[in-house]
Amino acid sequence: MFDLELFIAECQAALSTSDPQQVVERLVRKAMTDVEGLKKTLGVGDGALFQPLFRSSELTVANMCAAPGSTSPVHNHCMWGVIAVYQGQEDNFLYKRSGDELEKVETRSLKTGDIWAMPVDLIHAINNPKDHYNAALHIYGGDLVERPGRSLWNPESDLEEDYDIRQVLAYTEQLSQ
Ligand SMILES: [Fe+2]
Image (cartoon, rainbow, N blue to C red; front, side):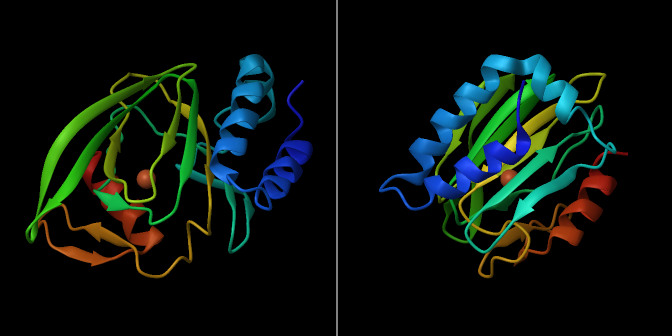
């Protein structure tokens, strides 16, 4: 059965290795051999999009659950991440900078069981295309809430703004109506 406390401890230990993301990806792969255990332990939780399970300046472990049709604004992370979808589907729209603008370069659909090691320079927006909640385990190599220097893009003006997780959640609500 998936043991959240042990998982967090192992992720913390991974930080002192030479390649924390790779070690965390291996831990996630092990956790995903027990999808039912993940569902039982985490499930959709309180239904909130972002449910932090552990936060420090070097590590975030979170359960993320998006409502049907939920769409996030475009944002970056400026840190490595590993996502594992254990329920439903999460579509990722990937962007790159092109001068002052963003260019959409790829769509990556993550289905139940998929694991994705996200690069440090990732810029993306996410959408739940299905008619039921999705659920995913997210691990990041930093504090996803407080890390300075990150950006989000205003969905109406497309202008780059300083990242603020409350604003991400507010835009997500607007975009998902
Ligand atoms: Fe993200």
